[in-house]
Image (cartoon, rainbow, N blue to C red; front, side, top):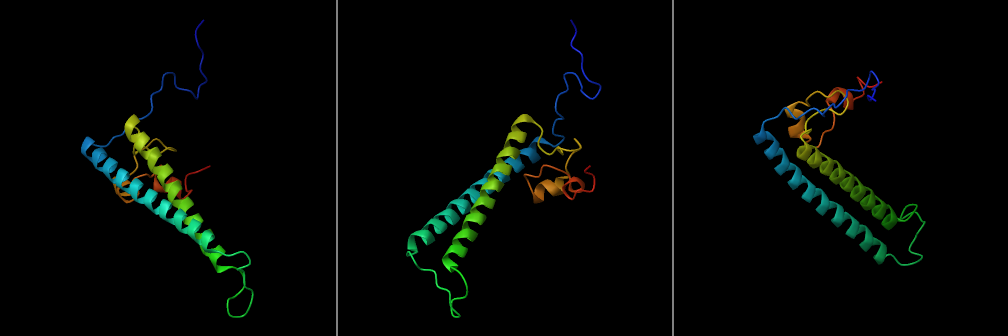
Length: 141
C-alpha cells in the first residue's frame, strides 16, 4: 500500500542547506562559541551577584521613609540582576540553537521563508533565526 501525502507536504523533503561558504561558517562558529562563553560568564556573575545581595540582606531591612524612597533597593537590584541573568541564558539558548543549525547544515536559513539570511545580519547577530522582514513582522500572518 503506497503512502499518501497531503498536497502541502513534500515527500522526503530535506531541509534547505546553508548557502554560505565553509570559511564563513567556520568564522561564524568561532564567533558563536566566543559569544556563548561571554554570555554564560555574564549570566553566572549576575546570578552570583543576586545571590550575594540576598545573603547580605537582614530580615526587616526594608525601610519606607523619605530618605530611602519606597521599597527595598536590595530587592530591586537583585530582581534586576536575576532578569539580566535570565536574558543572558536565553541568548545562550539561541546560540546553542545556531550551533546545532551549523552542525546540520541549515545555518543562515530563515525559519519562516527558507531564504538565506543576509550575511550582514548574521555578522551582526550570528544566532539570527529569521530575515529582518520576518523579525519585524512585515511578512508574518
